[in-house]
Length: 377
Ligand code: GDP
Ligand code: MG
Image 1 (spheres, rainbow, N blue to C red):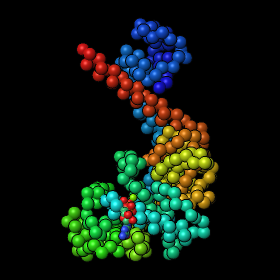
Image 2: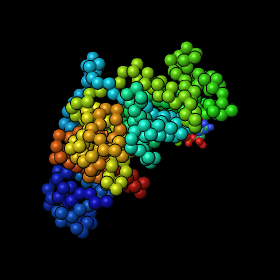
Image 3: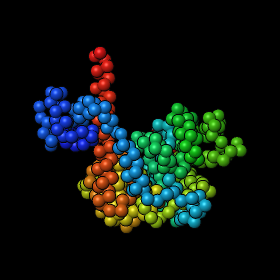
Image 4: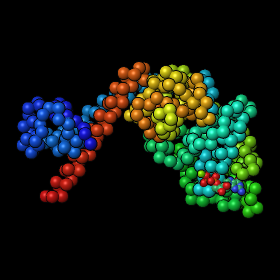
């Protein structure tokens, strides 16, 4: 892929253009004009002659750029108690076929039915349920997928609570154990939903015993992990499950600043009739039309915000998933979202990130060329 001009490469490697052109001729390059664009492999080949490390300095510059963009520090714990309460973010995990999608669909349908708009059953990665109590819960789908792994790699815990779905007729299985381990290592509390209790083979006690054996401290056995028997099919116990999540989130007391710089995560991204869109889960601040945000290697000045039912919203605060349009390029699930003060800054940050990525690729190509040379010797 096209990467860098000859004169830019000379500048990067700290030699004059003439020196660079001479060296390139020596190496057998035909086109050495200053605006000739080289691929990263070619550029790497030439840069190696100068023992040049393409990422040198760029890493520091990138960090400085990020610091510059991220103006606000995290609030101190003692200040947090004065912030507004936000909805809890709840991820549904569990073994395949134990009923995660069925339970999510039930929750979503009841929430769409409860709103005046609706009828949309498209796949979405995140949605909010407004409860009759006036409280809201945000549910996340498929937390095992790449976006969540990416976020976790960066030390971010997006979820506040995990609902662990275990089928009452199948009990604890490998992915159940995986989810338990994940929750424990990420220090995320669990609520167990023992699903499929409408089935004749259902055995809730066996599930409880198996969970206890795998280190889940069940309430019945003196621990503090709630177990709620449910049926995603009939809806039995789903209200109790919602209540359990609300009660736990009140104990955990999730709060966030609704003012100041917006931060969040891209949960998923796609292209629709209104162009490139991304579902952003706001972590702090309030997203509004006109807000300029950077995500990974792209940015947008928000044109409109839509909730999971496609209804236009005027704002979205912490704990709220919201569809954002107007992206210059396609963002990716797992990208961190940060507000920029103006379009110029957003564009600069994105350019810089792209350049850093190119430099890293060039370094990788140089490493490959070196390895090949070593082999030939
Ligand atoms: P997932 O892989 O965890 O998302 O599981 P699904 O939601 O796709 O459910 C797997 C199968 O179990 C489907 O055939 C569902 O209809 C069925 N199922 C899910 N929940 C229940 C339930 O509460 N009762 C019964 N009888 N079947 C269920
Ligand atoms: Mg599923």
